[in-house]
Image (cartoon, rainbow, N blue to C red):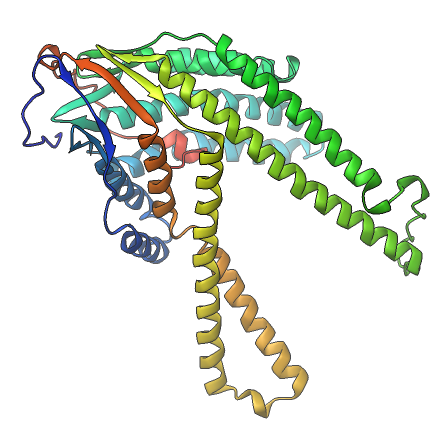
Length: 425
């Protein structure tokens, strides 16, 4: 049953303001969720995701009143189990059977593998649509819930065949594809009985995409030049690599080291360049999608920037990394200290003590890496806040004409999205 706010139903021609109120307790929730995930071997993850969503949804305010998320961890868990038993497990058994019968190098196994990947690619579209439908059905404001009323197969087919054309068009279908898929989703969305509408085309995105596409070519050419000519390295003069079991000469060792350094530098430069271009284009797409969307008498205006998206991404990364480093150092110190009580290092040989400390330090590093995503709810809230605060709403909603939408009878959620492991929130 939906949770109904105590606020009144919006009256006729109500102006709406969109704002963000940061949820409290996200750090504590992150730590509790991580602990419960560990002790339940990951099963609590479905309930953890639900708790995070409830906090994030409550941070989004319309006229000062929060969105309400009514989904449950049980629904997510059942959805995952159904997809695992009906698709994931049979697929694994089929692949194992074909491999055992014909061999992993056989043409039959290659054909089955190719068909499996095509099926997964098609199912991605179904997963996106059904995950969106579930979240819409579990989102309400002042007791009025959302819904998604179209066909997941129609969306999946469009996503599938347009996706196959991406390499054939060298990527130039992507703005048109993104707009077409967004239009399907938006036109199928409802708030109660009120329908969202998407009224934009892909034309305004192509100028931005041209900059993005040409920028990628320039990055590729620049990184290739950095590898082939960077650091004074001439690949044509690179000495022949030593054979198996042979020690490299000093000249070979220097050349190999220089080549590795050039490749690493090219990777860093290319990654930064791609991140900048991708953030800038994503901002243009977000703004265009917002401008093209209406709900009754409401219009939206996106105000995201590439610099803002880059800052959010970098600062979120540093928050996760800083916590992981601190956690790793603390655990390392505790483990080394406790170990020293039972195996005093001063009673060991120097090489034994060094090896033991090194092994314990590696444990701390592993734990630090495992802790990298602990504060993910905090970073998700920061990302959500940025987008909410960059989305302006104008016009008025005829609240008196909006009735409750029909219950779609959805009893489980997002199993396919979770099985394919692409959903973030």
